[in-house]
Structures are given as C-alpha cells and as structure tokens.
Image (cartoon, rainbow, N blue to C red; front, side, top):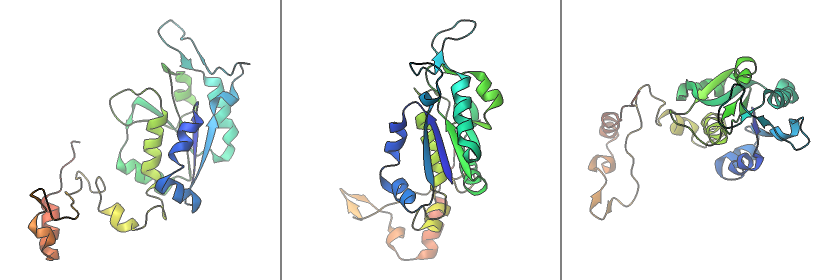
Length: 217
C-alpha cells in the first residue's frame, strides 16, 4: 500500500513516520508513504495556493487548481482520495478495516485556513471523513490519525497481529477492551483483581467479557 499526503507542511507528516512502529513497518516494506507539497503545484510565483472567498467571508480557501494538479501527478498511484472535514462521514474501525483490506492506495488531502474550495469535494474526492465533531487548525493531524488506524491493520505491521488486533478496542461491535494490568500486583495498595493472577483461564475469560465497556455509539 502507498499512502499519499497532499500537504503544505511535509515535515509534519515525515516526522510522524520517522520513529516507532510506522518507521519499522516502512523499513520492512509493509507500506510506503509519498508526501506531496501542495506549493509545488502553485501557478503563483510566490507559491500561494489559497485565495479569498467568493461572496465574501472571513479567511482564505485552498484553491482547486493546485489540488487537482497534485492529484494528477500521482497517476495510477492515487487510489482512494480522502479529505478530512468536520462535515464528513464519522470515521470508524470498520472503515479502517475496509481501507486496509480492500484498497491498494490512499491519498489524503489536508485542509487549512478557512477550508477548501468546494469543487474539490464535488469533483476530486472519493470520500469525506470526520474524526469528530470539532475543528482543528489543519487536516494534517486527522489524516495521520486515519492513516495510522489503517497501516496498523496491514500484515506485518505488528508482531502478535492476531492477538493484538482482534482482541482490542473497537474490533468487537459496540464494545471496548476490558481493563488491563501489569506488574507489580500491589502498588500503593492499588491491587490487580485476584482473578487475573489466579491462573484459571476460564474464569479470566469470563471476567474479561464481563468487564468490557460499551461504546457510546
């Protein structure tokens, strides 16, 4: 899988994939990233990619032209084009699984300022996604959130892939993960539940099922 990021701040994206499990997965060839600097496709000698809003209004909008040119430059590596927006479809673990299993490539368009010319949504984007009912200063962080949720599902990303992924939060419909503990068993008189150190796997399984939390949606 190749993941493309169309951004004004390439180093923000690059820094995320320079450490930890994402870097190890890239080094192993599990996936690859391609960072596209939107300013490279500006028709302005100063590299501007935004302009004022038709009809009036505060702020500046990203222009459709440089985004279109950036997408064209990706050719057949473009894959599914995603734009992050508070008005988009609420993102979910099921969508992460669908992307990881059904899509070969993904492209994320990061918005800034007052937003993006609506013609991008109308003509260039396959899916508009939201990670929550709030507004951030740019689309870079939401793009990284979605991409992280996808790449960790790819074969080879995690060591104990079955145990880590199948049993974790959100992979069961309507349920979150049960509480988990590690050593020491007694810290500051805060104790690990006895059943978890009993060695009785049947009772431990029952405890885990009983203590799974329900999602809010």
